[in-house]
Length: 257
Ligand SMILES: CC(=O)[C@@H](O)[C@H](O)COP(=O)(O)O
Picture 1 (tube, helix red, strand yellow):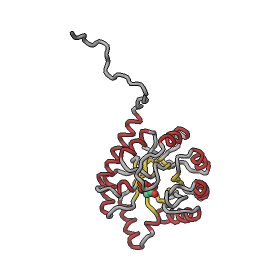
Picture 2 (spheres, rainbow, N blue to C red; picture 1 turned 120 degrees about the horizontal axis):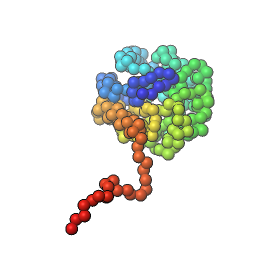
Picture 3 (cartoon, rainbow, N blue to C red; picture 1 turned 90 degrees about the horizontal axis):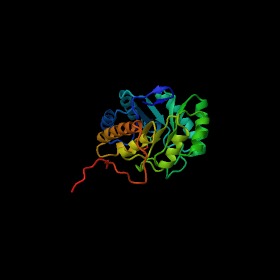
Picture 4 (cartoon, rainbow, N blue to C red; picture 1 turned 30 degrees about the vertical axis):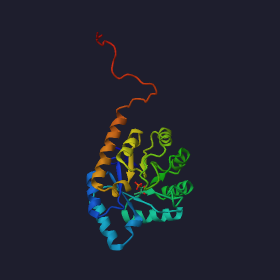
């Protein structure tokens, strides 16, 4: 199982806590997913006093490590302030850093992301940056003190899966020893299996489970797909080839007639 900043987690699935039809459904989805980490948006948590407390109690009852996130932050200042509030509220120095660069695509702002990562690392945070598959940007984030990278599969909430498989494979190969989590844009368990087959360590998702007709069943589907994909990765898969090759031996066949 993967290790992030010296902490082993129990599963390769990190699950978001937003958009579920009810707290009960959220709880069921978490239980069936076997998720190793729950990610929580500070903005959602701070939404309403009483509701916030009840929500936090429920998350705590799941007994999982919490990864607070700066979802919805569009500037370095906003993200850094939000991270500080999250550290106080959730009593953890882990932070999933989102600095959004474009309101429509929800694409990360690479410049703001590196700046915020450096500031937060210097402030003692363990930063999990939501980034793209860009290897130069990945390198800058590592230089800024990040020990984990979280490249997107596709823009948040789209459910498109791994949009740029070539870019993700290249990023994985460029930093083979860095723990990497595919974050955002997954829509189906097969996308999670593909992430495992490519050698990523974990996935973080929210919308695909929370918005499914049966979130708990979908959560379990993702958990099983992660296992299958990881197993395949470890089983050393065959190389695809262009030419057909008979899978049934032809030597020693009986000559008929
Ligand atoms: C919950 C969270 O952190 C999201 O910002 C995250 O990136 C998940 O994305 P999806 O909702 O596309 O799975």
